[in-house]
Length: 350
Image (cartoon, rainbow, N blue to C red; front, side, top):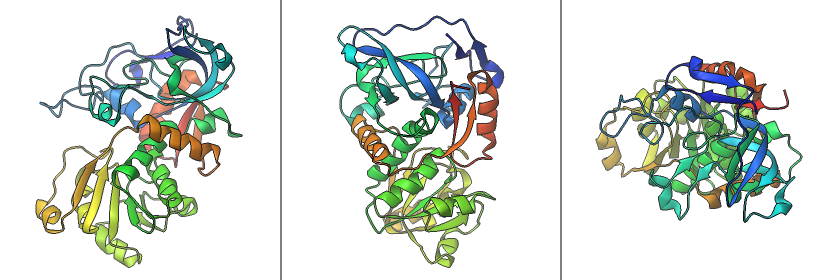
């Protein structure tokens, strides 16, 4: 089969394309998916670059579990395709079924999401979808009935499930104002749609040239990502202060984000693309009685909720670009450039 192997930590040159990789075989309780499309995520870039650090050393080179990665590894968590083989114990009637893959591999309740000894992520601890075939536990391959293309469906899994988890962790309800950072990216644009779907008022922070797209997607107001006074900008837009900040950026703007929250507001984070080491005034936290919430991957139940929203047509895929498998290096470089709105996808049909 064709596959892209990540051979070690480093730049795009660490990705090596092969057209003669061995086909994987499903084990007991597993099935094999012929990949139609697989989307890129920030985790792909940070894993390749080893940017997650360790608990003892924030600058250590490591994967998302903050430990070494077993190379070579096929990345690609967000997989859509058709079942073409099943392992022992799996209903043979599933062959031919169109599926979208839940990329979180774990057993048990949501506590497993915070236990790296029990949690695997497709494309990180197990080979993923940047290949012609991928094997996964049968329960992680969810039947999907949708008129959307494979490339469009592949925009959903990690980004939208992460966004849904953030909103659930922050207990966002209808009528609340949610300030969303990085709103032109996969998770941020998903947050706009999912917040709007539950009746909340999303406010997007985006870079230059992306204001119109955020508004069209459902943002109540749009702020420049570099505005020096976030609280003041919310007031000027007639929507502030925020009930919730949903942040995937962090870095130097964290203090401004906390200042933009109303008393008893909630700050939820699932990323730190502008820098994980931050400075904030804790007096803002305790005097306003703010709640700080960490969030990462969605549960299997939340992923099922996401698929239900997709099949009901309540979410819009934001397919910003498609690339053939041999051009994964270029796709990752374009992803890092952030000059797009939505998601970039490897389309196996190209």
